[in-house]
View 1 (tube, protein in one colour):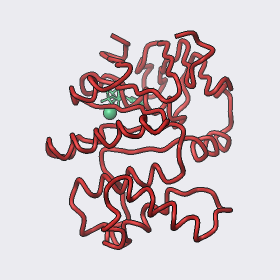
View 2 (tube, helix red, strand yellow):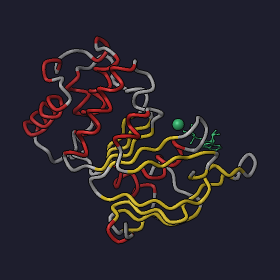
View 3 (cartoon, protein in one colour):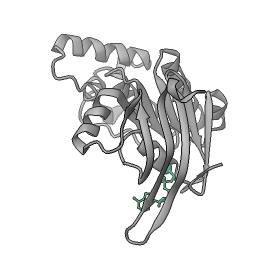
View 4 (cartoon, helix red, strand yellow):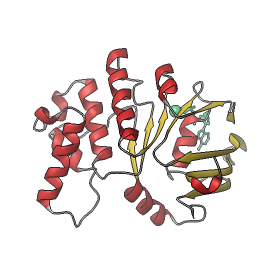
Length: 224
Ligand SMILES: Nc1ncnc2c1ncn2[C@@H]1O[C@H](COP(=O)(O)OP(=O)(O)O)[C@@H](O)[C@H]1O
Ligand SMILES: [Mg+2]
């Protein structure tokens, strides 16, 4: 892939933390991700996978290198700029679904919509639509506390999709789930790229690696 066509382009991106002692977390690496493709980040626990995902997700700046998103430089931007960038372009799914227990599925999904100008009717329609996409249309009004583990993850994915992010970043989304439920979630994530979004998934799941356009293996903070 030539660099110019990548949606996400990392060059020499690494992370060294200085406190409490100088520690190299991620050695400099290059990564190109074309729009609409999927990347699986794999590797042992403590390898640096979450660090890489959080750099891609503009949650943490690297200590070196350059990061271009759609041709625009991410380095040196203010925290406020980065927050606006995340809000506009990215959706996140984590190992734990982080739902508000007392609220309904659809109310949790609505939290993913960050556009303050969207009308209430458009917002409701959008939430119904993404709940339908994840197969939960019939559970829109059920309290999060009363959902199964797999259903909770579906709500978290719907919440991340609600704003139509150009990139969905999922960090070990299946780690807390049994095997069949985890596979269903991975299938669902694969559909995201089928619909044009770019997908970054951190997982140990072999099948996710098989399904990805690109596999990035991290071992001891290095791209293996
Ligand atoms: N900000 C930080 N300061 C110090 N150590 C960190 C920091 N972030 C991550 N680490 C360490 O870097 C290593 C990689 O962490 P992480 O990216 O979470 O690994 P993984 O997701 O592959 O399990 C771990 O040993 C972790 O404790
Ligand atoms: Mg991790």
